[in-house]
Image (cartoon, rainbow, N blue to C red):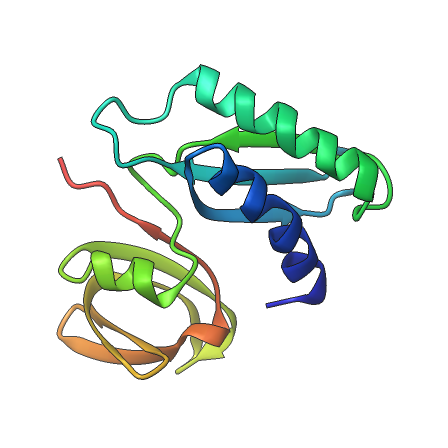
Length: 153
C-alpha cells in the first residue's frame, strides 16, 4: 500500500466509521485535472447505502480533505456503495467471498499474464488462490492491483 493511500485512509476511515458506516475501501486515480478519489462505504442494514448516505459521507470527507489538503491539485471526490461488482481491498474481504467468481489484475505479470478471472477457492497466508479453468494460481495480495467480484445472475 502506498504512503498516499495510507495517509488518505487515516483521514477518511474515522469520518466514515464516525457516521456509522463501514469503510469498504477507496481508489485514488491520479489523472491530472480528471483525478478521482473514490470512497466505498457499506452498511449492515438491509436497506443498503442510499444517495443520502453517500452525500453525508461526501460532505464530511470533503471538509476534512479541504483542511488537511493531502492531495495536490484538482480532483473529484466520489462516494458510493461497493455495488454488485464490489472491489476487494483486503484479505478479510476476499475471505467473505471464497466460492465466488472474481476478476483481478496484477501490478506485474505472473506466469506470463496480468489478468485473471476465476473461482476464488481459498486464502493461504497472504496469497489469494484462484482457479482459472482447471489450474490454480497462488497470487500474493501485494501484487494485486485491482480485484472485483463478478456478479452471477
